[in-house]
Amino acid sequence: MSRTSALASLVLGSTLLLAGCGGDSDGDTKPSTSSSSTAAPASDAEPATGAELTGDGFTLTAPEGWKEDDGSAAPSIDFEVLALDEPQGGFADNLNVVADPTLTRVKDLDELYESVTPALESGGAKDVEREDGMTLDGSEALVIRSKRSVGSADIDQLQLAVTHDDDGFVVTFSFGDSTSDDEQRDIAESVAATWRWTS
Image 1 (cartoon, helix red, strand yellow):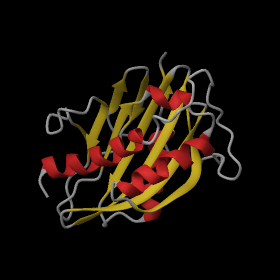
Image 2 (cartoon, rainbow, N blue to C red):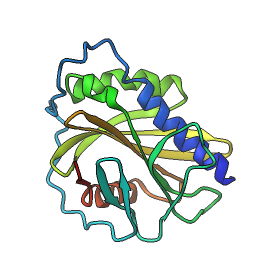
Image 3 (spheres, rainbow, N blue to C red):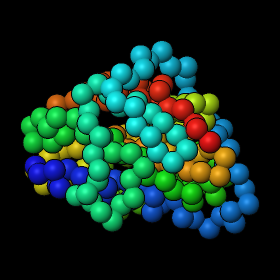
Image 4 (spheres, rainbow, N blue to C red):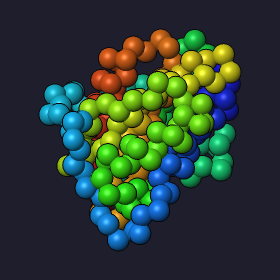
């Protein structure tokens, strides 16, 4: 799979999650991070040790060996952060962060999950499920796992939606089939452990 195709797949996942968040909320309600059964458990993840990446209002550390990318293959998306691993089996595991201020209009993580699931499914995502949350520097994030096919590649995605003050972000991890579900979760938790708000 080409770099352009790989980026197209991760952008598709990110934009579908974003598309599901533009609900009818009046914008005056600050989101609650409370959730009935999927609160963020305490994580003992070892922090990622790769390159430090900076977005507008946050920093994070990429997994070891993952390289920052400028996103030029997908110019219509304004990436805060984009990093890719070396391709294996024609697909490069990757992560991206995009800003989405509409997340701040959602009442709580349960409402957010209910609103994005149909959008993800209508965009081709399969097996959409909510996982235990993660914490990004004190802010609880909704975590959604899904699968999709892009060309001949089967892709797993973990997406984290998080708010902080008046900002919202979607963090998308996309993985090829050579990375197990447990490894995917470990990678995401290792990055989450390094997340720091800078504003």
